Figure 1 (tube, rainbow, N blue to C red):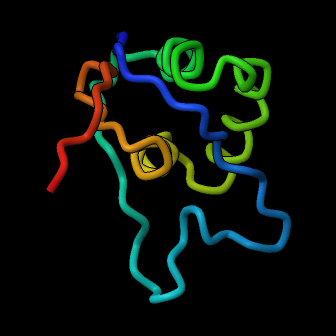
Figure 2 (figure 1 turned 45 degrees about the vertical axis):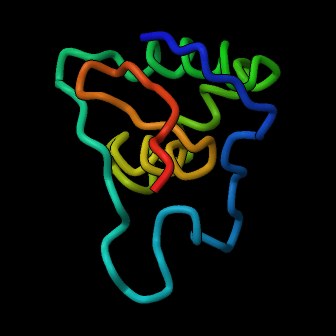
Length: 101
């Protein structure tokens, strides 16, 4: 679960009163990323943030609480991270830079 890709972007912020990060205004279901059930989301996030935003590793419990409480699964969190950090997660939890379209 590693990548040579790096960025200085921040992780999604808590949205007190605003849920734009996971619930688009159009009323559509938020995009979700699928990972295998045996992939531990906490371990995945530690690996991801250690490379992408080391200063955010301490925020992982808050990020998990925010997304898991609201969305009931990690797929929306991973989709949000893909969009924000321009990466693509694989089903095994690995990540790499998203291909330019």
